[in-house]
Length: 450
Image (tube, rainbow, N blue to C red; front, side, top):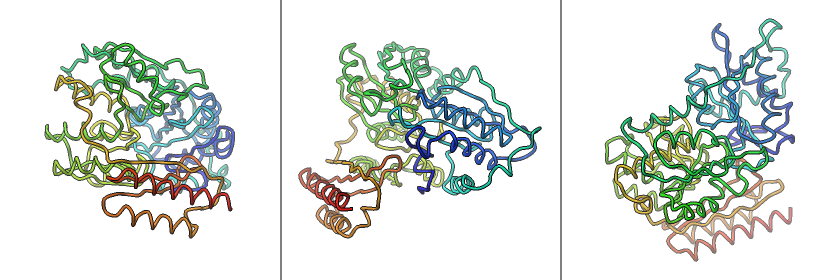
């Protein structure tokens, strides 16, 4: 579902431009607050953010809207998205709010909403909230004596650190491991290094000096080159790269090689399958995950369930079918034994647990399958619906026929940026490149002619 306000992961856009304005943030607070009124207790919201400059504006606007709806707001400050999902349950809140545009640059921002169960909202609830935003919502707000209060909450970082540490066996220590952690100048800049250090590791933390403008800037899970360099420089055993709100992770092995979300899922799934912990006989991922992962799981008689892109859809499928490992190639890893959403730190800890149990280097553990040649290209669009144009449809159909059963083609509009994403994979890399380029060219020509 992609409406006027909500996309694949909440509301997102350029800060101070539609839809990420203070006015809309305030109205989202009003609508969300009214949507989760239940019972006669004092209703409460936990509200976290990452380190973007615009977080101050959006935070204050949402506080105004939530208080106007009669909700008490617990302000968490900069904290990872999965911590908000955890704290909404721990503090028995009615709503969780995370102000973040995840891996996007500082000039973007977003609003992610969680229900009282810690899960992201369903399409139906988002549609209900969205339908309220352009109405006279003020008529339903709290009376003067029913307004909410807002206060800063201390100790939330410690709660999340303890939660993350408890996902490992009590007897397990990370002593002897030298770890470089790249916090992307984002929400985990305090909690991730602290958790790893408290577990016994030697920690070298980089990109832990946020200034409002440098979140995700040439760092973090989408720009791991600096982490690769640092791992070589200090001869680390492993590098961990989080994104701006720490709900995704990318690993770098001791040789500086990148380990993506597909390989991380393969490693965890194999480990949990061998120990009898893996539930549901498979793993949930999206249409973007590599065919090599599907084949690797198949060799273990496990199934790869595919969903549309978005960790929310992965989680919904996991809940519906009783699976406890899921995620995305980009590094959103969802381990439902612990979390209700993607958690970069907790996922990294599971990788570290495999290293400690098997006493083998990351490079040996993490290459679980040879990826099938895969190519993804983005085409920026200014508007319109190029995928509905006849020449584009014809090119897509021709590409599918050329790839046949030995390959896959995935073409979709981005839910967070004005892009068309074109991805193909197959055993013949030259064919993969040819079909992607052909489709990109047709979309570009159609865009130019519009």
